[in-house]
Image 1 (cartoon, rainbow, N blue to C red):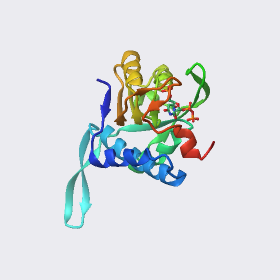
Image 2 (image 1 turned 135 degrees about the horizontal axis):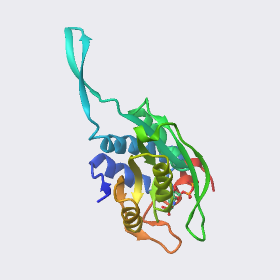
Image 3 (image 1 turned 180 degrees about the vertical axis):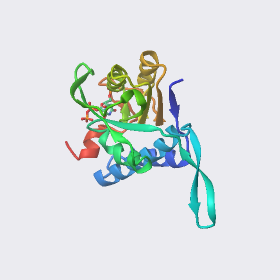
Image 4 (image 1 turned 30 degrees about the vertical axis):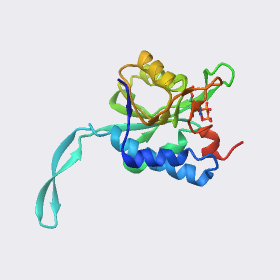
Length: 208
Ligand code: PRP
Ligand code: URA
């Protein structure tokens, strides 16, 4: 099962607030950032630790540190940028790779317009961020690109996922886990998630 619904009360509360129709751009951005931090916390729970010794005020002390894990965060433009800073708050040394995709409103297929990846993706964990997993076309295309570059550990963080997108992601990339703040009911006839958030990119950027 590649999609993991994060049912922490803070997550459920915050994703509920995001759904308010008249939410301001400021509030939508703040909640998106907070949810990105919480999802990053969950998605990194299995990162291995190693012991090291530091000079503590009371003398040499053994501590835990993350064992040399290299991370690239991968926001899918545009809306994924709204989650980027929240993840970087938790993993400040992560590098950033960017993928530009825009969903065609008629075909619902993602149209690729930009990519810039950091080097040595075969050595990195990729954390893809995008608020919406609708048909999953954009997520699947991004994972395809990352795999072609040699990335082996790919994880995704989304705010809202549709069952249709979950099934498509599972069929295309059963090895990729995706953490979501909510699994919603369905897609409507024009490919929007119900109840969903509306157009997440427009809400984060204040467009439309
Ligand atoms: C939205 C969203 C995802 C995609 C989800 O982006 O941020 O990237 O649609 O739909 P899918 O799962 O059916 O592919 P959009 O293409 O509207 O672009 P934007 O981020 O620039 O607003
Ligand atoms: N993209 C969005 O921004 N919202 C949806 O519901 C589906 C795709």
